[in-house]
Length: 234
Image (tube, rainbow, N blue to C red; front, top):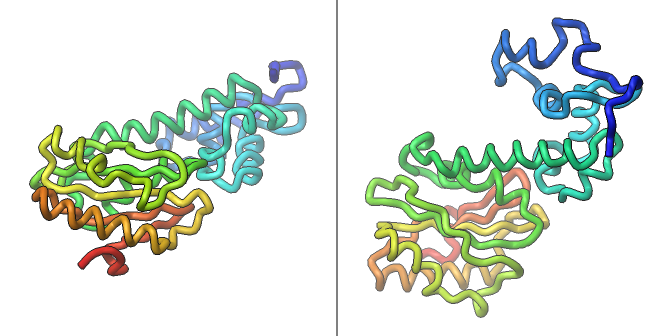
C-alpha cells in the first residue's frame, strides 16, 4: 500500500496557479485536463512525480480513460504510486459517472438517433471485459425508461432466449426497445450471428407490438448501428 512519506509529491508542491483544485475553482471541471482531474482524485504522487504526472502516466499506461475503466482492481493496485485506496477512488469515480447518466435519462431527452442511444451505454459497455447483451426500454416518446442487463458471457443466437429480451419491456410497459451488446476485442463489426439474433428479435417484437428500433454493437471508442447497416432489419 502506498504511504504518504516525506518523499511524496503533493498537489500543494505545485505552483498555486498550476494546482488542479485551484484551477477547477477558477475555470470549472471542464477546463481541466484528464490528468488534472485524476490528480484531484489521487491527491498525492510519488517521489519524483507529482499527482498530475502520476495521472498522465496512468492514462499512458492503460491507453486513456477507456483503458483505465477496463482495468481490473488488481491491475490498478499494482501500479507504482497507487495501492488499494487510490484504486478504489478511481473505480468509484468511474462508476458514479455511469450511474449519473443512467439514472437521469432526462439529461438526454428523447432518443432520436443511434448516437443518442449509444451515448447512454457505451461509457460503461466499452469497458466490459466480457460480452454482455443489454436492452434499452423506451416510452412512447422515445425516452429511456430503463436499461436491462440481460446476458453475460459469449453470445450466440442459439443461446439467447428471445422472449427473455422482452420480459422487462412487458413489465415496464415499454413501447419500443433497443438492443445493445459489446465486443470486448474493441472491433464493433457485427457478426453473422448478430444479424440472425436481430432478425429473430424483430420478428417477435412485431408479434408483441413492441418495436425494435435498433441493435447497437459497442466497440472501443466506436459503435455500429445494425439498422443503419441494414443487418437483421427488414
